[in-house]
Length: 199
Image (cartoon, rainbow, N blue to C red; front, side, top):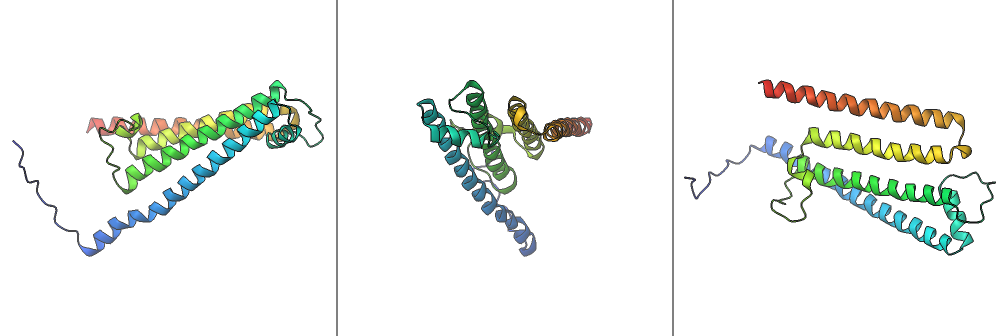
């Protein structure tokens, strides 16, 4: 039978209290990421508006899209073709994936390093937040970065004619490094989990 009056915690000494309170210095960083999320939402809406306008024949919107997806300035594109649509849609997906990464860092980071959000039994609580910790967050971030890098690489390959061979080579190498890094992080976490369960 539990006591109706839980034991009170003794107040921290001044120095430990100051060190513990220093975690709130991260709050402006998370608020800044929320502002960055707002910028991404605006960018998404602008690109989507250009795509819709170009579909209805707007040459100005089409040229804005052609410039944003990295075509060479001398490229003469007068109609919205399948390649342009595909590259714009991939760019929109890229924005969504980066936004997901931002949410993961903002919500998961605040919950892990600053303070509890108190979302227990909330119907909108993200499924992954219930078992998030620094290790899980690190792996999820690594996988998200690989997903974003994959989208960038796919965009580059579809539009390969407008890129230098060195750019294609380095993007492929960097993507491979991201993959190896994520595998190393996941393997390290697995080893640490095995070691902790053995104790």
